[in-house]
Image (cartoon, rainbow, N blue to C red):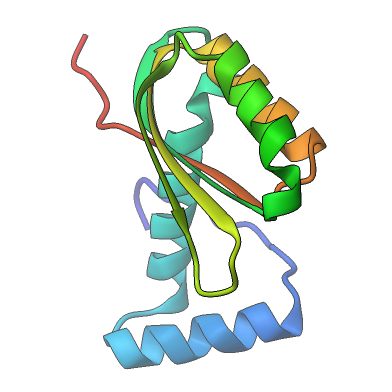
Length: 132
């Protein structure tokens, strides 16, 4: 097990069952899936740990009644938004897909303000890591 560290993690029973079923369906093991999931999670959130310029996609889902407040927040951070697509899902909720580029601190602030606004989902997917 060179290069690996073993540690205990507790998850909800439903999550453990889904993880087991997914590992079986994909012909792999739970540890590999957890390692992949954590690697992606950390990649998308490293901007919280160290300031840097980054770019990626922000997906926001919210009720139509929240549209004015969400739009105001997005306009406040308009300098980050390079592209914006708005559609409605099957339940009538608003779905925004935004391509962002800017300082990591600003992206963190934008995510925080949207979550405080009570959006149903706010997920940032960072672009590929850039070589230094």
